Image (cartoon, rainbow, N blue to C red; front, side, top):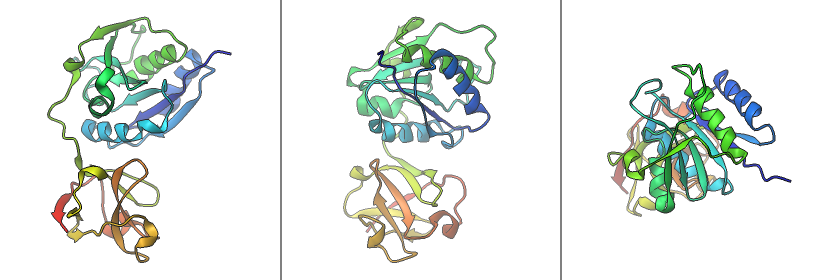
Length: 248
């Protein structure tokens, strides 16, 4: 039996757009599993999306194909549509910096390609459906035609920081995931949000019910939580605010 690669969706938009992308994946690679990872990456925030993506890559087997769309420059010549191969994983999407943190963490053997096999009648505003999903489907069934090699350095974003000092995601429990890698924060430093300096704990039960704290989450990022409570609602946080790093 052929070994079809799984396909993972990572984008800043939800329905109906992800459904339309899945229709193209089903048409081109009907045997492949399609996994929904994120449909609510911070809108238009390429740097936050880059950090969030890199933190979740290791959960998936080598050969997985990530279809990634955070693309405020869609339909313009601000970026090329492309493919990155790094660390054994494939990443399909706009070459606008979205794969910068992937390249920093897994890029020792990286290859970069521009997608040159563009379907006819492409929508100006929906390359996720019309370019990236069909390309991912081709890769999933072993078709690597229509890719032109590019220099890796041509898509790098040196202006991006290694650790994004902001909330970059909030889950249904109201936990606030930051773009700061836990290993990068010294023992004598912590996070301050809304005027609160947060203690650092190992897990939820180390805090009192309702107490705010910060901990290393399952993908290695610092996350702000309240034990058995909704940190976002209690703090009245909207959007994806910046954070302060302060001395303990």
